[in-house]
Length: 146
Picture (cartoon, helix red, strand yellow):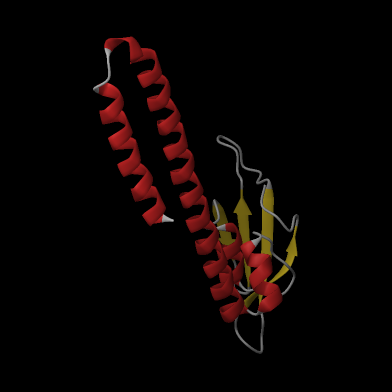
């Protein structure tokens, strides 16, 4: 795609140069062709960026699936949490919390606290698993962060 864009840029430059060396009666045509070429070039660049982003998203999804498993990787990529998710998975899915409270065996995460307020829009409670020592989600008010 990048090669195609380079060819079109060269075509635009040559077209603009040719149009600029035409007679003075063609200024309207020159302006119209220049605008059309600029629009076409910007749409090609935008499409190239979209394709690159799709590739990056697919690559990140594959990495999440390899690291956390097929189903959990999908949930994290969709910014969803679930009962049994680890603290790391919650942070990957929702980001760093706005506030948290830590007790010996419990962590309360708070997300979406409006400025000047105390109450969070979303919260997550994680309890330490005795067998593994990891903190796992036991309760939350929404699978998605709003």
